Length: 328
Image (cartoon, rainbow, N blue to C red; front, side, top):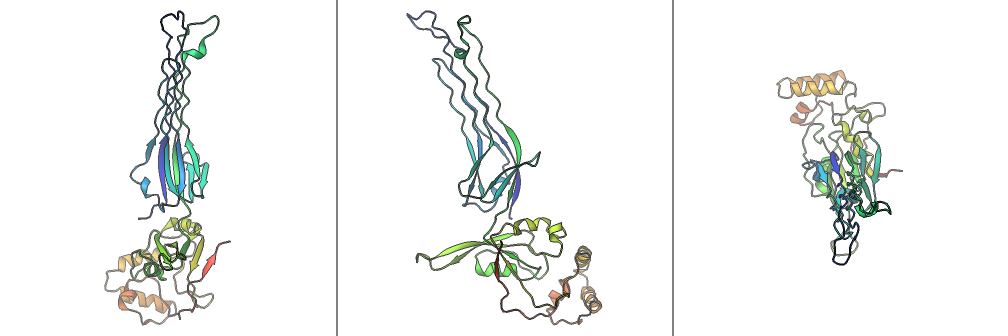
């Protein structure tokens, strides 16, 4: 499963308390205060890395807490600083505040780091409160509490090339051929409900001119998918995050389409699911084809005709079916 968004809780470390201590040594009467300051609490950072492709690491663990600072000690010794926590995310991750929706950072570069929770400041020891009239202070400051918040992580840049097109256009098949990925392939629409990733290797290993890129199989798009009129509502988010888009073309007549309209798409799918295992599903499909002015026997396989809710049309395959178009 591909995970492109998650919600986590981060808590920075609290600062250490200041020390109340007085210098007690032989031959040093009235040594005065020598309590040290507390250490600062650890902070939490989010860093972008190219070694990750998804946010699956944060599926089973959502709470992260940094170390607290240690308290001050005698002889003006400063407390140790709390240990920082660095969370690694893929490049292209957007960090937002879960309560306000404020954009905190957009991590696109390798090694880019942002602090999402600052550690608490350590308290001052009693050595800072000594004055000419108050030479033996018995007060010190407590450490401040670290910041805590809920964060939303959303992965935008998932691949170098994205495959987009209508359902059953052959996107998953192409991904399985050119990469080692094994996406689900079937003869009914919307088989892919979440993006699938694969790595395409070009050239001979060790030759010095080999390179590779990440290829993403985007779920099938229909008209109005950007407005949420799709069965996989969030599939339009990864589409605008690929460096290149590879679209499927067809030689269909302009103004005509072999797909059902978006307005009746949901009703078509629900009817198809009810009639999928019915003996009358073939007659139901042929009747819809006759109403649309298409031949009742398209020459397709019986199983594909029975289970497909979309009237298929015989279209010659174009010579350049998969052009790579850069996004400007």
